[in-house]
Amino acid sequence: SSNRGSSGIFQRRTVSGRVPADLGRRRLRIVVTGGAGFVGSHLVDKLITRGDEVIVIDNFFTGRKDNLVHLFGNPRFELIRHDVVEPILLEVDQIYHLACPASPVHYKYNPVKTIKTNVMGTLNMLGLAKRVGARFLLTSTSEVYGDPLEHPQKETYWGNVNPIGERSCYDEGKRTAETLTMDYHRGAGVEVRIARIFNTYGPRMCLDDGRVVSNFVAQAIRKQPMTVYGDGKQTRSFQYVSDLVEGLVALMEGEHVGPFNLGNPGEFTMLELAEVVKAVIDPSATIEFRPNTADDPHKRKPDIARAKELLNWEPKISLKDGLPLMVSDFRNRILNEDEGKGL
Ligand code: NAD
Ligand code: UDP
Ligand code: UDP
Image 1 (tube, rainbow, N blue to C red):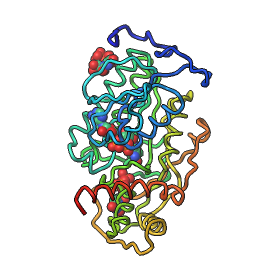
Image 2 (spheres, rainbow, N blue to C red; image 1 turned 90 degrees about the vertical axis):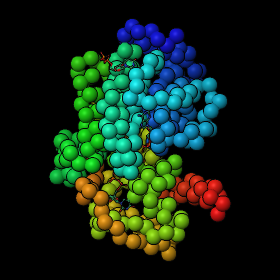
Image 3 (cartoon, rainbow, N blue to C red; image 1 turned 30 degrees about the vertical axis):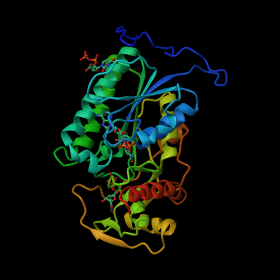
Image 4 (cartoon, helix red, strand yellow; image 1 turned 135 degrees about the vertical axis):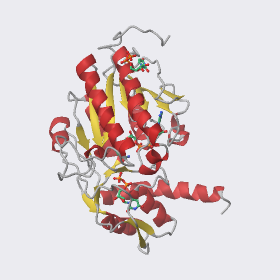
C-alpha cells in the first residue's frame, strides 16, 4: 500500500526494485507535478524514454491530456488528476515540481490560487520528499530577478521585485517556494535542486497563453499582425524546450543544489524576434504596436557560467533553428481549432 507513514524508508534505494538490463542502473520512480503542461510533458517523454517510471500529478488548469495521450497504456506511466495545494501520499525516488501556471495571462487569472499553488503546493511536495527521502527539484523562474538592476543576471543577484504588484503572486510566490526549498534542505536534510528557468518555447505551448513567442507564431500563421507591446525594444532570451529538459535532468542527477540559471543567453528585442518569426513563417507578416503591461522587465538575459561549469550544460539550439520546430505543431492545432469552429 502507498500509505506507509514511516519517514525515510526509501532513502538511498529505489522504490521500484527491478534493474532493467539495458540501463545498468536501477529504474527510478519519479513524480512530475505539472506534467501535463508544456515543459512537463517533454520532461516526462525524456524520463519514460530512458526507462524510468513516471507519475504525473496535474489539475489540468493549463495542462492537457493531449500532451500525454501517446503514453496512455504504457505500464511505466501513470496520470493522476490532483491539485498540489492538497496533500498526497506516494512512494517515489525523485520529484520534479513544475505545477504552477507560467504565463502572465494564466497566473493573473486567479492570483490567490497562483500563490497557494506556489506556497502550499511546494510545501506539500517538500513534505512528501521529506517523508519518503526523495530528491526534490523546484522549477523556479528568471522572474525572481524582477526588473533586474544587474545585467546579465547571475544566480548571486537578489533581484528587484515589487512585492505588491500584479506579478507578485508569481514572482514572490516562486521566491517563497525557493525559500521553502532551502529551509527543508537545511532544516530537514531534504536533497533539493533549484532551477531558475528563462523564457522557453517549443511544441505544445498553449496557443493563447499570451507569451510573446506563442503569440507571434500563432498570429503569423493566422495572418494577423504580430502584437508588439511598448516600443518593442525590451529584450528576452529564448530557450528551446529540449535544451531546458536536458538541463533539468542534469541538475537533478548532479551533486549541486543551485540555484542554476537555465536559459539561452542569446538576447533579442521583441522587434528582432518579430523579424525572425517573419523569416521563418511568412515574409509578408506585419506588426502592430500595443501598450505594454505593468511592471514589464526591460531586459533579461541569463548568465549561465555556473551551469556550464558545474552541470556541464549549455543550450544547443538557436532561435533560428528552434522556431521552425514548433511551427508544424502550431499549424496543426490552429487548423483543428478552425475545423472545430466549422471554418
Ligand atoms: P504550463 O502552464 O504549460 O504547465 C504548468 C502545469 O501545471 C499545467 O499542466 C497545469 O495544469 C499544472 N498546474 C497548475 N496549477 C496546478 C495545481 N495547483 N495542481 C496541479 N497541477 C497544476 O507551464 P510550463 O511553461 O510548462 O511551466 C512549467 C514550470 O516551469 C512552471 O513551474 C513555471 O513556473 C516554470 N517556468 C516556465 C517558464 C517558461 O518559459 N515556460 C519560464 C520560467 C519558469
Ligand atoms: N505532505 C504530503 N505528503 C506526504 C507528506 C507530507 O502531502 O507524503 C504534506 C503534509 O500534509 C503537510 C506538508 O506536506 O501539509 C508539509 O509536511 P511536513 O511533514 O513537512 O510538515 P507538517 O505536516 O509537520 O506540518
Ligand atoms: N510581448 C509582446 N507581444 C506579445 C506578448 C508579449 O511584445 O504579444 C512582450 C512583453 O511585453 C514582454 C516580452 O514580450 O516584454 C515577453 O513577454 P512574455 O509574456 O512572453 O514573457 P515574460 O514577460 O514572462 O518574460
